[in-house]
Structure formats: structure tokens, C-alpha cells
Length: 318
Ligand code: SF4
Image (cartoon, rainbow, N blue to C red; front, side):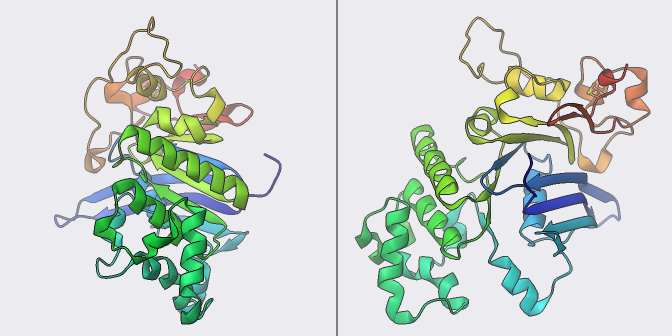
């Protein structure tokens, strides 16, 4: 990509100290960029660190190491008013809007609250503003009078998207934003996100455990395993050009993305190790059918093997 990244994560790590003093490494030295008008899909099984990474991007969690740059400026040490101002630019769409909505607020207040907080609208403008954003997410204007519990899951997620976009952010991070919805509803929400991204030229991070869904909208995909990015490649190459044994296993574990039913569907064997007991060497070694002696000794580095395609696997050099 030729344009400059709008958001850069540089060597981000996040460690948590447990009660027994052991260290849990949730994110380990991850570097990824987000670009205007592009979607970066981040995929991996539950516990791979993708949500912790997302929380650092929106400054809900502080990294243990590394830097986050917005338009080239380091933002992770911002405090007070500067932090508050910067939050406008990077908004998050969570998995469960009900948990983040005040149940006593009507949809109008939910959408307008961030704008009022930032003093971008007057109270007298709430109706017009709520109507505009409801239209944007394809909901009827009279929904502004409803409470969250009177909405379906898909309608709540639309309100959630309207609220996230009300501040006109440049970057939107969707953390499993569609995984609680049924498949047809998931599809319409993804189509809405894609349309809004194109209209507003947003940079979008789409974090999801569903490889097929990520491949349907991401321009680039980063695959995470045990806190590490093990492969990154253009979304269009996800079906045919993956090289890392974990990515291959992820794809074999679902129906073939092109619905080629002649292809064997394989499950990934074994369990992901606990991040408290991450092995020395390659994080995927215990489940990898191609594990070699070197994999147990040296952690493979993420290296470029083709344009826009990076892999962390010793097979790529041996
Ligand atoms: Fe498998 Fe070794 Fe590659 Fe890790 S480095 S994915 S263990 S072959």
C-alpha cells in the first residue's frame, strides 16, 4: 500500500501479572498498521490476544511495551484533555452493545451522548441528529424513542455503529461485533459496515474468530496465535496462498471458503497452550504437524515472503 498508515501499532506487547506472580503474555511484540479506506482483519481462536490488542488500539488498556502512533504521533502516553480529544478519532464497536448501553437511555440519547460530551451539538439538535444517524444505519427515525431492550440484536448493533460513528472518527475497531448475531443478520451488518467504510473512507480493524467472515471484507488479514502474529497477507489470498501451518489448519477447520465440498475438512488438533505456559520457540509447535527440532528452540521471526505477505515459520527458511 502506498499511502501512509493512519494508525500504527509498533512492537506492542501486553503482559499481566497474576496473583501468584506468574506473567501472562497476552500480546507479544505485534506490529500492524491501519490505512484509510482499508480493513485489517485480525483473526484467531479465542484467547489468541486479538481483543487485548484491540483494547490497546483504542487506549482502553496500556501496552507493556511498544508504541501506538496516530498520524505519526505517539498517543499511548496521552493524558487528561489530550487523551480525551484523541479518543474521538478512534472508536470501537463492541460485541455486546447491551452491556455498553445505559438501559435507561433511549436510542436518541445513546447516539447523541458522545456528541454532547464533546460539545459538538446543542440539546435542541438531538432529534435531528439522532434521525440522521438512524437513517445512516438504515433504521426508522421513530426508533429514537425506543430503549435498548426493545431492539433486536441486529438493531442494537446498528445503534452501536451509529453511536461509534457519531463523532466522525477516522478509525473504527470492531471487536467480534457480529459474532452474537445469527448468520443472515451478521451478513447485513457486515454489508452495512463495508458501505459506511467506503462512504466515510474509514480505516477499520475487524477482529473476529470467523476466518470466512473476515475474508469476505478484509483487505489485509493478520492471523494471531498465542499473542503473536504468525501470518499476514492480502485478504484475497487467504484461500489459496496461506503458508503458515496454523492458518492452513484454521482454513481446513471450516467449510472450504469457496464451498468446494470435494476438499477434506480437517479440524485443528490439540488445545492452544495457556499464555502462562507459552513454549520456548514457535508458539504453534505443540499442534503443528510439521514441527522440527529448531521449532522447539528458536521462535521464528515474521518475515516477508512476497509482496504484502509475511509469515513466521521455520519452514520458510529451511
Ligand atoms: Fe510448525 Fe515449526 Fe512452522 Fe512453528 S515454525 S509453524 S512448529 S513448522
